[in-house]
Length: 167
Image (cartoon, rainbow, N blue to C red; front, top):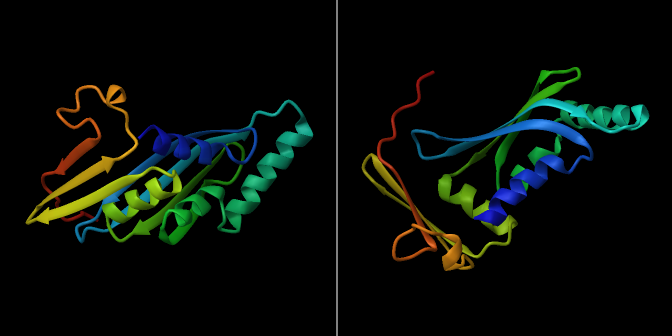
């Protein structure tokens, strides 16, 4: 799991010395699909050089306006479709919202693990209104997963009730 977290953090830092607050949320829709939303807020360059700050911020802004921020590339790489982005604030410090759709939670996580080169099996079982997601990572060492029961490489997340989204 550590590798998966690192890839998300590293994705946010690829554009140079840009500082930003990043929030990632996965919305499970009533039909089982997933919308992965990334909010990048308070984005600014921390470079010592005024020229470098201006260049980095201009590059970030231009990629965002063109609909190609680096975070969308990362979401596309893990299998996201219907990629969208919008600026919430078009001046320093910038704010951007990017979204991608996935067939289901399994597809989103399989893509993430594959990109992070983690050998993991993802199983999603639906039983009425209950969905159970089981992640089995082959490369997790027992000492790194304390308190996980008999099988330290197994994480089970139960989504007990899925309600219709309100809009």
